[in-house]
View 1 (tube, each protein chain N blue to C red):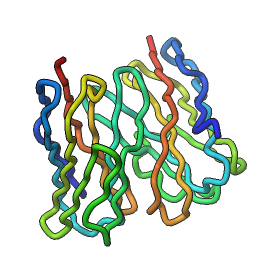
View 2 (cartoon, rainbow over the protein chains, first blue to last red):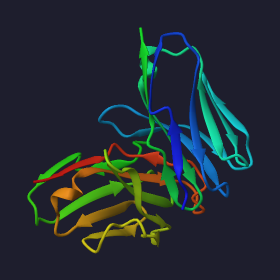
View 3 (cartoon, each protein chain N blue to C red):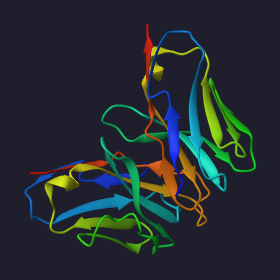
View 4 (cartoon, chains in turn orange, yellow):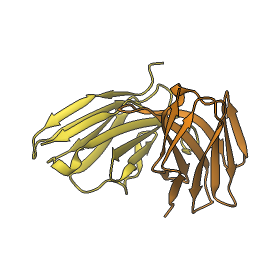
Length: 109
Length: 115
């Protein structure tokens, strides 16, 4: 059974810092990996989808990488802003979507 | 497109009552997923459909839960009878390819409270 772990569970940084969120998974036979953002009391917003054949995806200040062989993905956020404060979830898809517990990010002005 | 639509947004009911949650996927998407989110267990996949057919319902907690997708634009998740431990946020998501390998888009969720 796929296990997805996200480290750290919570992170607080000053505005402007670059930061990295980590996601690890136990079964490397995946179709894709997706990063989401969830604001308190809201649904999930898709940020980036990386197919199993890809190594990274970029969208604006966000860059996600995937190393299938080692079972790891990172989400890099450049020049963080207070509006980036949210919980970030990674989800691994191998015919059964498994979510990590999330990293709660706070960016202080 | 309006995105994935879920109703109701909030539901408060008493133990033993039947609860029906509704979802309208994004037009053109042919995969639909039901999830449950709690503080204790995080996000869990309950069931998913490809082309209106249930593919994997192994995440459905017990027989009190059932899901249907009578057509490509509508799905329901029913709990009968409901119990306090069913209190959670229930999300519906859809994606565009039957293989499930495409990006999933989530609805706003239904917050269910069973008293």
